[in-house]
Image 1: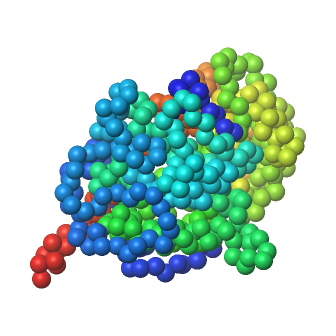
Image 2: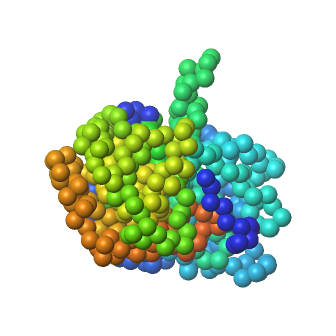
Image 3: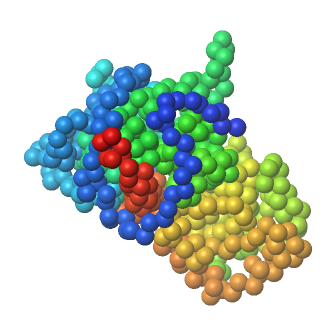
Length: 479
């Protein structure tokens, strides 16, 4: 494992895929459960339905699989190469029971994950990076630019790979799926879309679509999926267009998304899925002492102005605000050093606009947070990460789109915020910015661990659905 001091701050309309009846479409409404994240249904020793142990051979070659038959054994977890970890070796290990959530991860071939980054396994028997010792090479870097803002799957995978040998974090990887609260699918779907969504001649089908079809076949054959119809599986599809060809077929799983703008309500919803923050591109404002008087710009926006779909409001606001005193509203992109310029602008601004674009969310909100620039959120359909435990109104201002386009409304609202009120929000944003930092190794309450905690809070609802659906299974088997 990399030493703790070595922290890396890196920068298909859905086509219905018909699979076996065991791949369920999540049309059942999930119920909210009031239990805390520390309650773990895996502790109850749920019975494994008999049909779960007879699965067809998986068409994708993979590494070691979980033990889904026989007596329940003592809880164990894996080392980074998928082998059972020796609890007696080396330094003290984290007890899996101490983690908020226990996770079983499929040993998918590298073409689904680190193969996108040019990594090849050192031997035919290995599919994972070796993160067990300090002498090992560091993980391959995730591509920069706009790619990195949707790199969530990368960070979660790294965290699981190192969890057995790291200090206790929010999640720990276990060797037996029956010991797990959740099953993680390590597919870098966003990067697959970014790099391979267009066919390369002479091929007629994109590599991204081929991988999605492979994934559906693989999961539908797995006993871990068939046991609960995929309800306890976690799939990261953070880019709004990622997993486009497979999302309907895999909709019973818990998706980790940026928003629901391009999802049918029967495929994804706030009751079932988890919203994760973008990986910010602006530099984190460290040791920020630039208070109210040291931020001369009142209101700041830099980005694409002309957007389709729900983003037309950006154009309206541009013409309303561009000539206002102490307002900076300009076009910007990554190609013209946009991230660096935006970072400088946000660091010197009191308020930063986050306006709906092609989708309800954007990376700009998280750039503002780590710049300690109070966000002004104008996006009626936005969903926010960990909002069940984090009150954004303490450090953000929300404005309805219908009000924002009223002449003079927005400027009057922002100008009316007193220095004391702004400073209170500024202080709060400095307290919560750590929740939006992706890093390896993960740290307490950073973005990686906050996502795991959010997923842990989904576990009671998943188990409620599973238990309700199995009410008559025993009596039916006795007929």
